Length: 242
Image 1: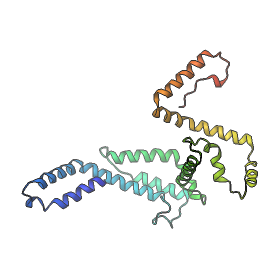
Image 2: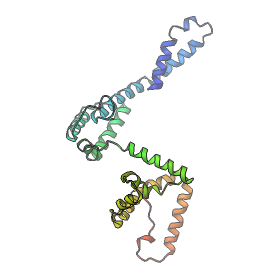
Image 3: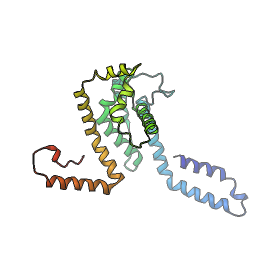
Image 4: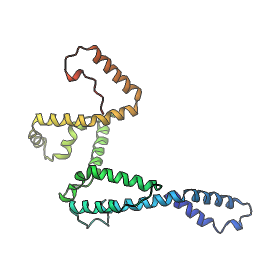
């Protein structure tokens, strides 16, 4: 839309010039600008309408909460759900309006799947609507660890970054006392669940980064599994993340 609006501004600025241009340069330039505007007018109109619907969705969700328009507004999860259902029911578009149809399809699908995970932030004081600040903090910790250690990998943050964020201690002894309050078995259990949840994303990332090495590793793992005797142990099974 920004590019289309720039072309409109160029057309408006060049409109009085062609009659004064003896070389015909501005006439040819204006012709190209008009053709680009004519060819993309319907798409720009549909995109502008889809953007208008997107702003209504953000307003319905009271997002972002720190913006001047939403700072003093307070809704319960039930009110947000009712407003969102009304907005979805009022959404109108034709089959030829692709931006609107894509937006509506994505909105309806994600609202049906994740509305129960989104609504508690309106009823629990202090619970943020997104994890942007948390991701920013983890990124700060990663940059600091790279500077102090000189290593590119920051895998250690998966084990210790939670302590840097959750625990507030005046001394190392106090920090150690707080950490010891978490049962070691529960800690390892949750760490295992975290690694299991991240394995599909890590596999896809590795596949995109170096498909040959990733597939070669899987083939070697498969050959090793076939060569080893069947013991019924799950560690000897070839596992590919879904």
